[in-house]
Image (tube, rainbow, N blue to C red; front, side, top):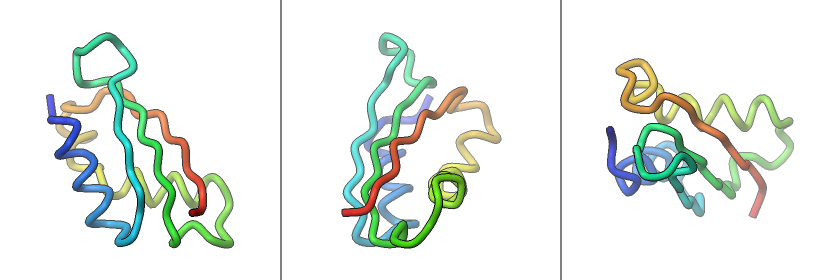
Length: 77
């Protein structure tokens, strides 16, 4: 299971300038996460496109099973 700070860093690296908060929503297991992301890259994009950018940032963790579920709250700054 990835550290929350590692997941946050992956997203911040993929989306420079983003403000990111990552939380565990399933009681501390570390594999059911919520990512709150406010990124300038989201301006003009629909919800699905925003989510795709965030999923792309953590795809390796999803593929490995380290993250089982990811809920995304994506907004513009």
